[in-house]
Image (cartoon, rainbow, N blue to C red; front, side):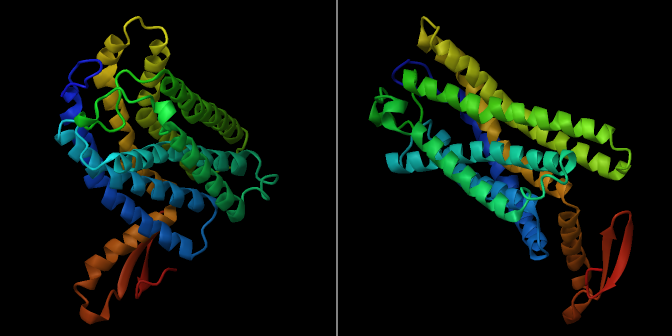
Amino acid sequence: MSNGSCNFSLDADIWGLTCIYGLSFSMGLPANLLSLWGLYQLGLSGGGVQLVYLINLLVSDLLHLLTLPAWILYLQRSHRWVYGSAACNFVGYLFYVNLYASVVYLCLVALDRYLAIVHPLGSRRVRTVRVAVLSSLAVWTGTFLFSLSGLYQPVRGPGRVPAGQGLCLEQYPVSARYARFKIATIVLGFLLPCGILGYTSARIMVALRESPSTSDRERRKIVGTLVVITVIFFVVFGPYHLVGAYKFVAYFLAVDRCDLERSLFLAYRLCFALTSLNSLLDPFFYIFLSNNVRKELKSLRCLGRWGSSKGNSGCNLCLEQDDSQYKVTDNCTRV
């Protein structure tokens, strides 16, 4: 399909994006629902600050996953949106809200680890569930308003693409206001969090080196958490923002903006789709971060294994992992 304004085909991204979105939806939805169950079980025993951030991150992922079938249908119709402009704006809105909410919540998890390790005593008043809930409300409010500003018509441009083509949130070339908006999102939604993540990680590593009392097990867990956050942050979100930075800065320098759009179209769209893998990778982050979630998953597997052989009596014997050993409990009661 031609985009009508810059006169080049948009079909090059159809199969690549369909595969990425299909993988994210088919594997991410059950994984995130299972993680939600695990976090709910953890919350019953009185979860802490990180539980609040992880639940919000999970909700953000689930909202994002619900938009993927609509985008797959849009691609399979060769970039033709048939559900109306209001639905297009709503689905696109949820997509961008998830992107930047996820970035902020990953930073909050890293910041919480920083406060707990580098300032364990001074941060007690800050590291409370109440503060975490208020911070989460602020994150949702900020990302909702910021993403909404990107859908504002003067920002997106006058709509040079003919309405009959049915494009959804695509315009080639984009308006100058929208290019400036995207540069702002890269600075505030990626580069600034990069700085926060780099600073907190460096301070945590210094604190660990200066704390010989920290056990090797705890040290590996802390470092591993930071590695997981960093990999998700840079591998999933990094390419989209780096290619976008080049694209929207070059927009103001290019002589032929259509030629710029044409040359970066496939790379930018693939990097855009890559951000959806965040919903697929986050459940591994939850499981790694919390031993309690792993116990709940093992308990669920145990119920399925023993329940079928015990009839109506349920699970009378259960193996549960506690640190390095397994404990046998009656009636699956946690010890």
